Amino acid sequence: MEKKTLIQNCTVLTFDGTKPKFLSNRDILIQGSTITAVEPTSSFENVNAVIIDAAGKLAVPGMINTHAHVPMVLFRNAGPDLNANDWFNKIIFPLEANLTPEDVYWGAMLGIAEMIESGITCAADHYFYMDSVARAVEQSGMRANLVWAVFGHEGYQKLEETLVFIERWQGKGDGRITTWIGPHSPYLCDPDFLSRCASEAKSLGIGSHIHVSETAEQVTLSFDRYGKSPVRVLQDSGILDYPCIMAHCLYPSDEDLEIIADHPSGIAQAPKTYLSLAMGLADLPKYLRYGIPVGLATDGAVSSSNLDLFEQMRLTGLTQKHHHRDAEMMDLDTLLDLAFQGGARVLHQPKLGNLKPGYLADLVLLKQDRASVHPVINHAANLVYNLGAGDVDTVICNGEVIYLNGEHQTLNKAEIYAEVDQRLERLLKIDLKRKVADYPS
Image 1 (spheres, rainbow, N blue to C red):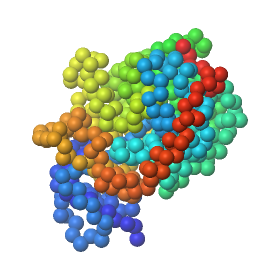
Image 2 (image 1 turned 120 degrees about the vertical axis):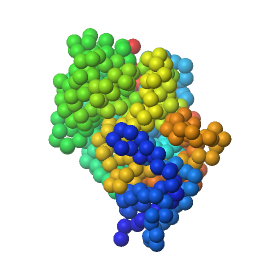
Image 3 (image 1 turned 180 degrees about the horizontal axis):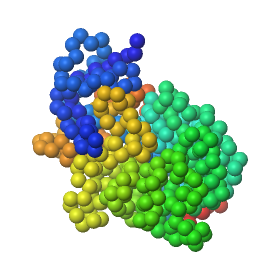
Image 4 (image 1 turned 60 degrees about the vertical axis):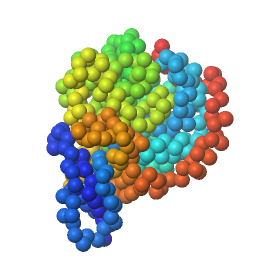
């Protein structure tokens, strides 16, 4: 018989379509990996279930990190105050050349611990040595969409290695792990390589995760090389014929947006990185008018300093208001829909992002007892602008409690810290002759 869990007497954030609603004094019944009921408190009598007393707490869907490089927490805050070109070529690529599979495992464990503590139950991770990341995800109880980043200069043999990873881990961890294909970007993968990736995605029935139009310089470079935009390069290669997570996409043209809207693609947004590296900001209301799915992302902790989607949510709202000089832009309803349901749409996970019967039981209980959260005049404003990662009390993923009353249930943080710390001296040595690739300046 499947285990039952009953969360009692909480306020629940749920959505009717794109409209968020806050329901007070509710119980949530979970059976196995699925939410089976959300009813007024005391509706369930004599139910044989594990009871979680959630009085005073707010239940929200588990947050979905639509684009991350989770093991990069190993290099957190390395190379601050640099432009994108120097940041990549003088810091990031040389540091990443030091990595071993075991380094990536412990970096993933640290990043996963941070994400769980921040209320993230699912992440789309784009990195290297992804068997190591998959091991960490499987152990942690999180959900993840994993891709092994591959560069065009590494050749088809490397691509074949990533395909073995895809088949090895697809559906593992009780279905929590999905694997897609991960060409790095149109500026580091030529059209022939991208076409091969698209062919492999079709053969395996999977999607892709790729960096697109991150900077104006990348768009200019694409026109110089191929006479077309990065988005058009992806369309012509066939990549966009299948589900695609497009990381960043800050500089699309109207034609590009029409192409994206006409394909099963979504855009991942990480505004803290854009502010940190002075990259510019996307026109998100315009993307939404085209009907393009948009989700929040942390990117890597080297550029964003943390894996905190609450901070990204606040910054998304505030930067768009500032960018448009219009305080009515990115209103609370739109922002909450984007923050919770948007990620599910980008990852093509229709059973995530909401707390309703039939949805997967990925949810977070937030404490609401700090002075800065009172009084609760507007639940939506409180959630967006006052509550945060520090208020996360309990995290459930796939029906399993993985964080309870502020304590990890699946991870040993002391062990993780010790393993990471003993690697740092070696990892932080920079040899500028050992670069993965050149970022286009």
